[in-house]
Length: 150
Image (tube, rainbow, N blue to C red):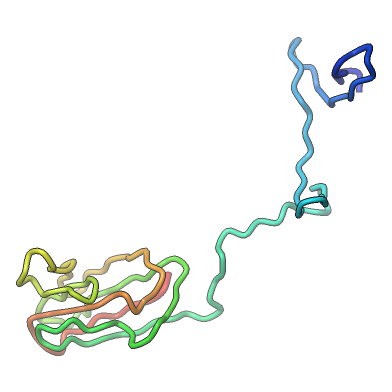
């Protein structure tokens, strides 16, 4: 390329690819990837591998949970990892509010531990790594929430 730049001219320096536009030289780069000591050049036939999400469940994972009056109830009984979090929705048929939070969540009775209040039909998204960390509480038994991983 006629626009290339020689490093340390006269001393046998390396040649760097360049493209001159409007009197300014711009370095020409190629994108490559690979482990230390190895590269694969990106081309039209060899694309750049991109992993947007660490892993995606092959199935839709959902559930529901009913409240026990004035008791924090876990949405699930055992560890249920999620990569992006969950959406929790209060059932449309609920006659009372539900409160979402950690294992210490209270149902609007203690300001320091009250959860996030949901009226019937309302929902919230929680960016969390495990569904088992989310609890629901209400001052009445039988209030229901639904959840799904996102």
